[in-house]
Image (cartoon, rainbow, N blue to C red):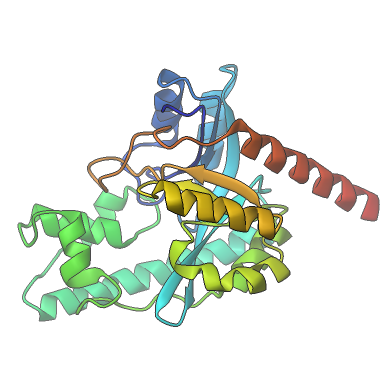
Length: 281
């Protein structure tokens, strides 16, 4: 079923294959009405997407995906309806992107020690000026013939338990929630199946949504996530997590059905919170 909503998209501003404007064009071609640009640790592509969507009838929600850590697991927080020009927010994101660059260089050093050298310049080129991430390293490994696919690169070398893995800059899930809220955004737990035990503490910390509809989730998993969303009074959201086929095998934009009600509830909550801040100020 083709959805009219996709709240989880990545562009060349982080580790996606297509530019923000290209994502907008693809969304329009597929008949979508609402998308969210949720690049990793950056909002650099949001203005381009907003400009590309002007006069088209397509709503682009300013968003982000923040990567955080708990013991033995990564936890990703999506932020929607952000004030993406907030200076304090942008300063924090710059520090996180700098940490990503240093991490990538350390991973290349580990790969070289394993007999799999890569050129830093090529990895940076693959990032296209955007946030450098492990998918770019994986792409470079495929180009050099070290692995047959980016999935193999993660499974054998740069995944969490791989010999070339390097820990990221430590941001806790609660810190990410607080950061999103301080930028006026709505924090949502992304692809949450493996970290559902964290839900009570994240809800207490200000979480407002749960990514219920997601690539490769079974009907049973979606039903369970929808039940948990109701239990904790969270907005059920979803999206394709689209990066592009050259970066990550995934469904197409709009390939995961997401109800329009998810957008309506997010939009209403965002307006309510903004009104509350105006009254408070």
